[in-house]
Image 1 (cartoon, one colour):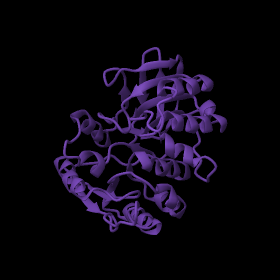
Image 2 (cartoon, rainbow, N blue to C red; image 1 turned 90 degrees about the vertical axis):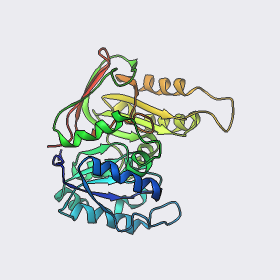
Image 3 (cartoon, rainbow, N blue to C red; image 1 turned 120 degrees about the horizontal axis):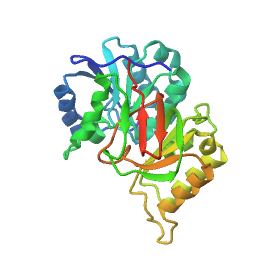
Length: 307
């Protein structure tokens, strides 16, 4: 495990778009959040490039990642937004370069594929958290508690997630511990069978998603179950499944039943109700650090992701 250095006021943040193009107005608005936090910023060369639903070609987006990891002035890299396409350029990344220049890497949603790839190829702890254009820059803004969890980058202390943050439901009782991994279910599933296939063995697996109908969630969880990813895990954290409701057809198995079915098949301690992902608040957590889950106390304690 490699942890990045703690942020300090006055540090410079690199902003990139490794997936889809950001909303330009939202991105501009979001910069005030960094300034209020006492941070400077640099924009990636290709951040406003548009290539269909991608923020530039695979090579251009990979170049921005390399540039920010190489730049010694940049202390953290924050993604402007998610969307589509990070998996397309994962094989183009220079993981030796990333490993030799460890720094904070922050995002969620489609960025999940990069979290998995970077962690497994380099050992670097990364951060699953709200992004600039898609979250902090929204005209309605984000809740104060969402902003509060960004400040974990400035202080080396463990995070405790309990019912003071959101109601938690015990799906299977027990205690479990291990490295916290995962993120967006669609991107986790798409890694199976690739060189970046997620390793969930003896780890705490976090899952969340947005706008996927119950049948699609069923299909993805079934693939994770059949590939051994659910049964390999030490425990499972079921986070927010925003707007995952039937749309194409009214006859559907309820999402709650779909989730419960696969959690039961996995047979591992599991809690549900974490406000992590496409939700408000969106609580940020480090991926790749040690975490301990206790369903009896409805609590997860996560080791700090920074030095």
